[in-house]
Image (tube, rainbow, N blue to C red; front, side, top):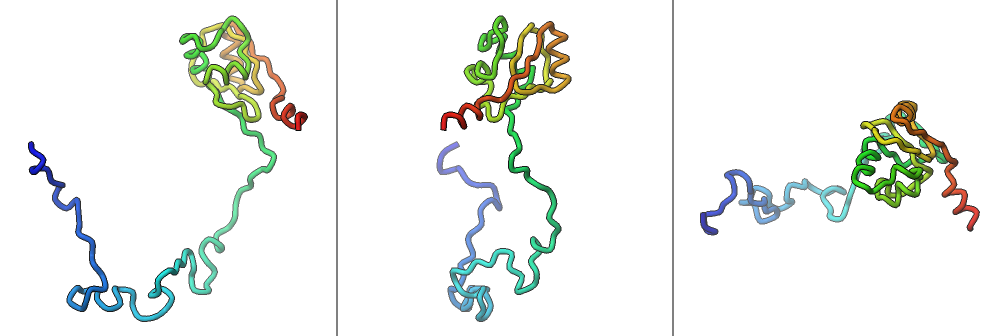
Amino acid sequence: MKLNELHDNPGATKTKKRVARGPGSGKGKTAGRGIKGQKSRSGVAINSYEGGQMPLYMRLPKRGFNKPNRKAFAVVNLGLIEKFITEGKLDAANAITEDALVASGLVRRKLDGVRVLAKGEIAAKITLQVTGASKSAVEAVEKAGGKVEFVEPSAKKEAAAAE
């Protein structure tokens, strides 16, 4: 195959319709915009405007609520903790704290704390010190011979105290 033999699939490219190029073009004079009115002018954007009628987005019911003081937890699965232990990025001999999870790269930032979920298997005997964990995650860690200790989320408190 040579460069001069390359071509697109049939129908892949279309030539652009040139508007306002005389009556023979099929889109001459007003270029398909009709006569007069706001939409025939340039520089007008009428998003969701319905000509005085109540717009659809205002007619639909409002639902839901975003809690202003909700907590955002960094989520970690047990399978990933096990993977990081086998790769040597986490030390199972010492207690695995939230700071250790951040330092290993398993969690990017603590947010309001770290919460452990039970996805995956854990075989190592570990001590986890985290803000929260699901019941099944706690059971899985205890089944492997480890334990889960819950700590208060202190990062926000320390930052507030420093200011």
